[in-house]
Amino acid sequence: MITEEQVLNALKSVNEPHLKKNLVDLDAIEELKIKENMVSLKLTIAQPGSGEQMALQQQVVNAIKGAGAESVGLRFEKMSDEELKKHGGQATEEKKSLLEKTDQTTFIAVTSGKGGVGKSTVSVNLATALSRKGKKVGIIDADIYGFSVPDMMGIQESLKVSGQRIYPVKRFGVQVISMGFFVHDNSPIIWRGPMLGKMLNNFFSEVEWDDLDYLILDLPPGTGDVALDVHDMLPTSKEIVVTTPHPTAAFVAARAGAMAIRTEHEILGVVENMAYFENKISGEKEYIFGKGGGHKLAQDLNSEVLAQIPLGQPEIDEDNFAPSIYDENHPIGRIYLELADKVIGKTE
Image (cartoon, rainbow, N blue to C red; front, side, top):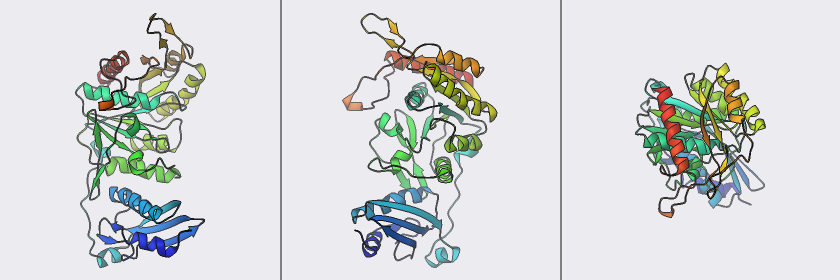
């Protein structure tokens, strides 16, 4: 089992990014507990809740796991002004949050009542289609527990973190930010509601976004903490509700739509995913999951069906790998371009 001495030795290799000194020399370790090879730490740093913290936490986890720990739990607190001054720290320049630029960016939350309806697939392909239409687009993978956007878009590179700012990864012309960039080895995220909201706020305030025409938010399914935070942070956001044709999926999706209505978000419309399967030989459409769910949901929400996306799979290009992005000349890719045209028509 890892010892306290081994943990401290590991932390000597990790520098606090703002003060450029290792965590041990800074006396930044406020609390250290070890139980059954699981390490729990509370650290004081100069700028908690920043891009620096997100980069630092991965360095700490890697260092301690490299010393033999099975798992690492971290909490961060702000270093006192006295300690900060003692170690040569100083105030940093405030950057403008994307939330303060709402006059030029249209926020579109893509939501669903339940998982498994292809909400993330719709999100990444809509973002890509808007980019292909010449728009400046970003996407936030706001499904903190079930992040999948980097994998779906075939992103291999890591984020660049400089000072307190995070620079999103760009793919297919879309700027991408995801919790997946901060988690290695597909580790689970074990956070409670307030921490989720703080991380989501960081995605708006600590990321160096270019000027955006559209920001797509791939929300977690349902009406939980993250969805509530989005409704609070973005009172002018618009929403697209994703469902399948199955009546149960549409019934559950109506809850997400009802939340949007109650918080005065504008529902752009409904996307019915997995609407049918088209036989390549006969051209006949087979309605595997039934019919009518999307139209019934749109009726309940006093909205419209923006697109019916059939079951399909993008053609895999090994040289430009992206397992969930349809080529613009693929039949389903063309449907997403039509969806992008409708979204542009409703928002400009």
